[in-house]
Length: 129
Image (cartoon, rainbow, N blue to C red; front, top):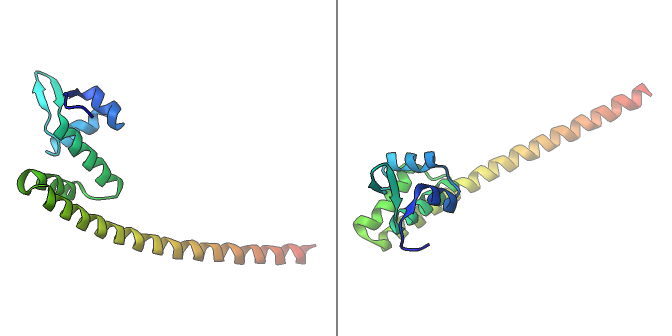
């Protein structure tokens, strides 16, 4: 992305989001576009923040956690921000793996019930014939 300012339409196209999404993140104090009257202009920093916000949301990180991570860059620099991002990502990965294990167990249970029901149906159809 270039250093130039982008309007809301260009941001929406570049990141595949709606204007409402951008305004929401602005309201939540995650983005801070420059204002020219009613016009919102997004700089390189806003684009970087939006990229991190969207990545965090994709992986199920809360907006509050995302805010804490992106704000670290302004206060403590990139190193601490990356450290916090890794910590959050590892925690989220562990949670997702637990969820997958639970889902796998339910899938296997359901597959077993289906197999049992199919055997019962075969038996009922055989007896009826």
